[in-house]
Length: 288
Image (cartoon, rainbow, N blue to C red; front, side, top):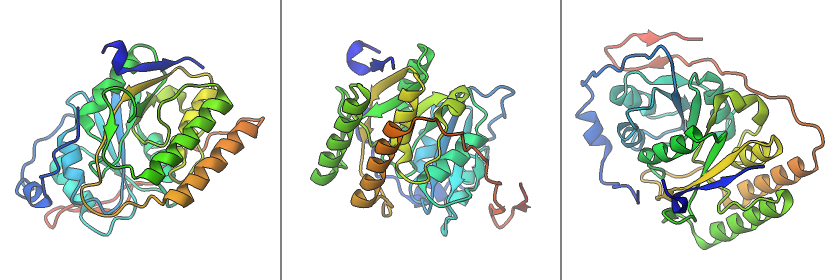
């Protein structure tokens, strides 16, 4: 990776969206078994709710060096969990105690066993093929790596003017308040070292967790890297993101952490794994 492809802070293009759920259903009886590794190096956490038409594409593009995939199911009403198990039988499914993307991610982080944890969305907006970029930078000694849509090699086709303006304002606030030089802020493609979870002490329940990750890493003096990433539009379904509501929550998060003198205690309590009906032929899995 050359200098134009990553940035360090010390304090592929748009995916093909032609696949459809029908393609995944033709593979429902394929039962390739992934061996459960004795040591887990890379865990990928995917929060998902009603993503049956998107999740298969994400799982099928997962790099081979990903040892563990954790799906945090937000009480989906569709076949998100069933499709996930059909595509990747070794997937771990966990629940979340409270609603919200942040609560889902924290549950997934608590369940992860890998040395590295990667977080990625389930809606096809982020390409799992890019995960290797993040792992390369972690291997160089960084503690946390964030994706940027505005670096050379990155981009987005899913940002209307108001979101771009808001992201720019909030990014400017972070750079001004914390003396950083990030090129992007409100984007949820991250990777970090699991042994830094206690330092991050995450508590957010909503989309603002993406900003909390950044500011908590800054305040904990973690070594942060930035790599280019391409964001595509959601393939199917509707996003739960609300520009004004979630932008306000991000702003409150920034102000809170800038003014807060005492670091919070971490809030990593794993939610119990849910009871899930996998297929008509399968038994009900009782966990937790």
